[in-house]
Length: 508
Image (cartoon, rainbow, N blue to C red):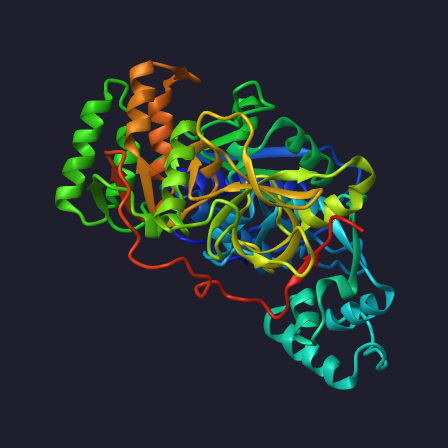
């Protein structure tokens, strides 16, 4: 019998709907009964939606715990053993590394959608080692790994259950045992998708091909994807009885002023000036909200300023670099970057998969650590990735105000492309969360003056909602276009290094 957590009425309704969906798939969430998966079963999708603070993440975590207690295995994206017909599996996914990391910080073993769509191909010798580590084979004889290295790998696996991390503990790099990546050919089982407001139609179709049972968790008040959905979110297209809505009954902490502000935006009569008065009042009574006339340049190194307009983003980035006396022709270790995609011809598909599978997908946040060993390569720390440090062929673009072509201080002929990440648009910030967030209020004021409406709601309210709910602990509402001088130099000392860095070549 699965232990049921204390749930509110709307969460109980959503739990019952998910339990019914799982029962139809042969998984008894309440009694722990597991039937073999039916490969001919038609795809079934359910959505659980709610605004910030409504308990979506709490419900996702409780459902994950319940499925584990029922005997369902959580799929690892790093290595999969031999499939068994009676085995039932669950994958918890998010669109970005940062969004997956937010879930992992809450004890939910999440990974990115991309890491499930594409799976690693292991060197045959190390595949035998992986099978042994996972209890699916006998201990291999010493070969490229000595007995001592095998012992170290086993001890590491028993501690954290990750095959790549265990092989890294034995002294290997990812390129030693992973020979490439392939698109998943066989379907999986149950998929929980967090931050599903970020999904576009193509991603949704890909997920339905892989998961016959799919549960989406999303916030209808966020901004819809910029492209691919005609301005809407995928769960808005589901039949009404396939969407369970959560109301606001839970908070980050007892009385969160950040959530109070977020939910105040639902008032159709609320104007921007009145909302800014509410921010000022919240700041007077609670230290978790601050109104300031300057952007904190120290904070920008790890938590970007959230803006609406690109022109504002570019101005703030140049002000940040000037404040740190960064040379125009090179990057300083510790500068933040945002992955803008992969520039590779079609014949280099395998290398594209390798870069993306290691976290260098569009929108990924990284920190520049320094030049790589080969010309055009950068050493990078991918924020939120489970194996964060990589060396990759890079094209770094520093955009200039009023100029169409960016300045490129550091570039390979092809590889992962990056923009500076000291300031990002609110659209790109979706799915991410930081302890402290700076919101550039003059941009939201401009959106309010323009009077634009999106999906039936004033655009400025959607922008404000998404921006302030990125703050986990503290919101800083910046009211003037000024930058405070940094109090300390840029550093990389705060970035935890893994056992070994991975080198991701984009050129032969």
